[in-house]
Image 1 (tube, rainbow, N blue to C red):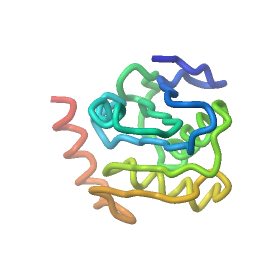
Image 2 (cartoon, rainbow, N blue to C red; image 1 turned 90 degrees about the horizontal axis):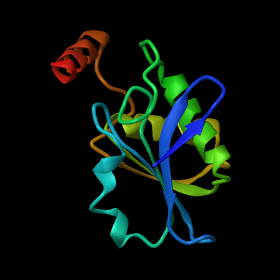
Image 3 (tube, one colour; image 1 turned 45 degrees about the horizontal axis):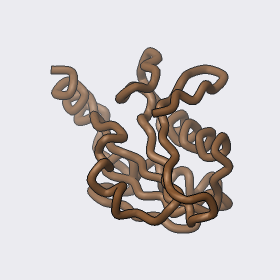
Image 4 (tube, rainbow, N blue to C red; image 1 turned 90 degrees about the vertical axis):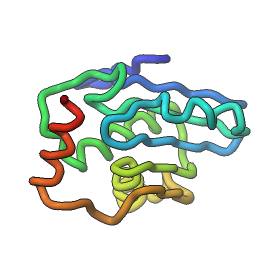
Length: 137
């Protein structure tokens, strides 16, 4: 675990795998953290970045709401910090939304995407509030 100090917050991230291996970025969904990938990690032969999004795991929890653009920028800044580009980005649920936004914004960082349990957009604000309330409970 490494806390990466950005100008406005600290994000928990872990970079593993051989130097020079193809980069893979793993983005968890709402209410999860980088431990989601624990069982997968030993099977990989990639330079793998996994992270805790803001408000999750060991990353800072600034006051919400967290705009999608902010979450995309957080991943972009981590990839820049670790000098990763031309990566495969795997996103689960809301992490898939972040992956898609990153690909649109920074095509130089994203070579390919794998999306699971994701969509091009999710529900209206009342559905999000319900999900967040269940997570808080």
